[in-house]
Length: 385
Picture: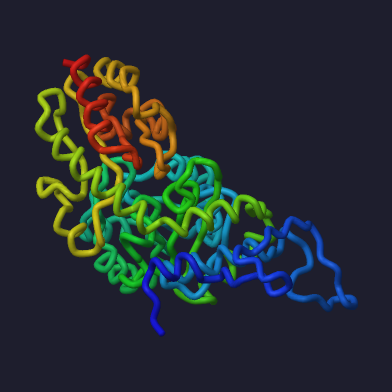
């Protein structure tokens, strides 16, 4: 029987405990496991290498993304690092120019000094990605987010995956903003999917985690080796919290998307807002791609305020329901100023031409009543006016 997403989110990898019948499997907090004889065990020997609670989370992640296997990590950055660690000195990676500041930092400050060539595509177009590919001596990987952070461009995953295959490259897609409920990159041709499970998958701003999901087992072999060798693994409580969050992912994403659409339309009509970035607005340059490859448009909105940095500071400090904080994807609504927060690691001379201006605000729309959120934005915008 083929099960729907919501059913798999609740049941995959989460069978009742065989010894007690507990509907919710217990947390396995043991650091080590008793062996029957030297080298003979029940599938577990040391918790860094494997853990039943972590294995349960990895099972449901793979099922929801349509991959054969998954590896959970202690953070989204650790997951990104493991994927990039599969490259060797002299290899090249092409990345989208609009991406999370922490990922830019990894590429520019960690992997470039290790001999990895990095090229950034000048736009979301396949043509610009191909130009970046041919600029490298030994391209090996295409890396991009969709929707992107923070300008919410929806990249054509199917077209970019086909481009990557034509050059024998690995396609890695950061699916954090969409979540597997709204979009499944593997079904569109991607080889690897990366998540910060801290965000929508966990959904409650109470856990840090990351994950890599692979189209097939072979693609994950090196990443699993690095997961064990480097040891950046989540603890069992972290895995449990993410898996608990996944059970309500579908209903949360529907509400996030519904509220964000209304707020994006409200902001688009406000005199203090210069520009709104939301994949669900027909005015967004990648709207048609988003409509084709996503179930809905998500809960993230970015906006450029009239008045630049001064306006941004005033707006952020006047909000009452939205909290000024980094991160996203939780039940509570958050406001972020990328230039000084999530993307501060990108130098201004690179950041500003890419559209991450001093007046840019990023909103993570939570599950509060949408009228309260709209009123909060309205009163904060009045102070900007």
